[in-house]
Amino acid sequence: MRLSAAITRYVRHAAWAAMLACAVVAAQERDPYAAPRRALVAELQAQAREDTGSLTRIDREVLAVIGRVPRHLYVPKAELADAYENRPLGIGYGQTISQPYIVALMTALAHPGPGQKILEVGTGSGYQAAVLAEFGADVHTIEIIAPLATQAAQRLRPYRNVATRTGDGYYGWKEQAPFDAIVVTAAASSIPPPLLAQLKPGGRMVIPVGSSFFTQTLLLVQKDEQGRVRTRQILPVRFVPLTGGH
Image 1 (cartoon, rainbow, N blue to C red):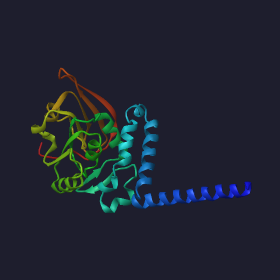
Image 2 (image 1 turned 180 degrees about the vertical axis):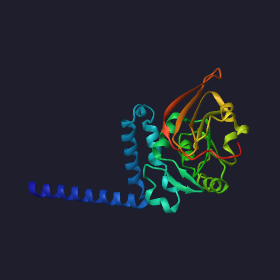
Image 3 (image 1 turned 90 degrees about the vertical axis):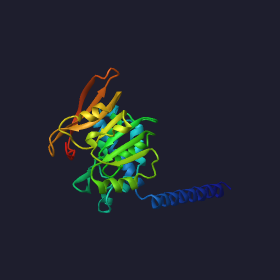
Image 4 (image 1 turned 30 degrees about the horizontal axis):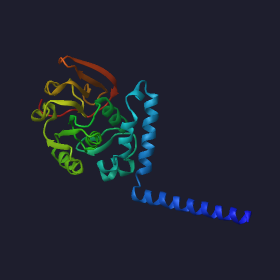
């Protein structure tokens, strides 16, 4: 009897293990990018620990969002194999989708939340806008390159809280101002005055500032309730330049 019971338990355990294995395989077939996304999140978490002070900025909520937004939908087909590599990728027209770590860091610095109004300058492929939208914020994003703006608008259609526009983001989106946060995904030589004017008192702007195609500095710009502005240098970065007629 004891042997029979042991065999029964073994058979049940084996059957359960087989069912679990089948479920894992089925899940991977439904979403073959699930494992690469988890690996990316683990890499970002490790990098945040290594970077001085970064762990307090990139929190679990940001990592959870990075872990569920399908980055492979925001890269060209030629880049699909590298969609979850922690590096920037080309998206055409001389533009890139930012390194996931930088997306996570800029998101954390912007402090997005439900009901906030956020301006993104430089839609690109739409990935950063999608990440911000996952926090429940109302995202307004501008792209100066018309084909990229059109493509991103199509990708972002599932998000009812994202509005897209083709235009020069240097001048912001005056009709929708003021904004609780502004995220600029291209490097400016200095902080654009129109964007600063459209930042709400108490708001935050995250922007790379520096010379085109050289190392720039990622800045956190904060405007207090009295309208006074202070900046904080975060880390060296390299972004494509902010373009336009300014």
